[in-house]
Image (cartoon, rainbow, N blue to C red; front, side, top):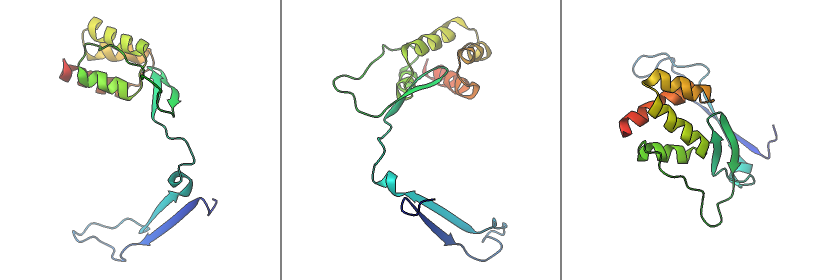
Length: 136
């Protein structure tokens, strides 16, 4: 590693073999923290947010929008769901698929099967289902 770009700080912890509550300490007892000087100097453009479909990330926005940022009409699934989809950069097609999956499927298993078929990972589909039922 280039020592000009990475500062490494090692901190030796106590030499006791157990904690105050009697639990064994992990070994080795060294904590390493690495700080990138290039990150501190902002030499890379900031990632403001991703753009994505249900199948994954399609792009990275690194500059603020000039004028108005793209907006999408409400999904009807609740403000929390809309905020989640906005924050994660989901496109209009993904929003339509999620709305369809909610309205046309009878339960969590059908919902998950539909959105996962379109590319969403199962853990996110389960989380999104929970968010929808709490919002509707």
